[in-house]
Length: 255
Image (cartoon, rainbow, N blue to C red):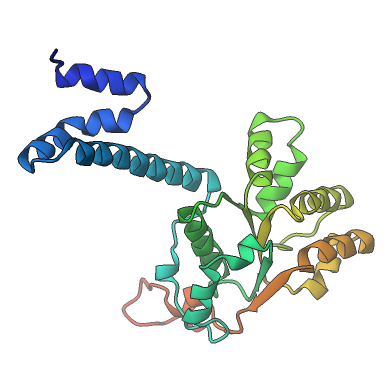
């Protein structure tokens, strides 16, 4: 009983093996030219399907993570003497993530805090973790509208189900009492369930000024710093300023 390739492809699609169905003609041609056994053919079929499913899952998680840009650790510049390539490679092993440690990345604007956080987030997704990236301003707005908009509900559901949550530009803006309370409840929800990367140009000793309420500040710090590694970029010059492009032939702007 013979079947056309199109019929077999349709059967694969009915079994929700779409990637294999699309790849089938090329795979059969290769099997015939290389005299594959049935066992080799089956292994290639299942291996291809699993590979494509993993790739599509990574693509989906990268989209859901909502990174501001695709910046990998391979593009990270190690001019910062406070963080060596060896230390970055150690972070890429994600032992700290499995142990629910938090990372606090401190430094002036433009020294590479967001790049490091994004690069670690992308690497974590490649290794099977769920990651969410959000700026502090976006987070507060999303928390405030969570009860009334489906978009905010979906975003917060993904954040709460992530293995790693990256909050960028923490303490960039002062919060009122309601905002500080919402932020505390999120940190409390994530405590002992996920790791957090926080980037900020202010150290934890200054967070109280912007959170306002001493009690909320203490509660937030208690949960974040319980298990945390602090990375402080000491470079006084912004990387973006040192490597900026100029519209002039000669640098005429004094910085």
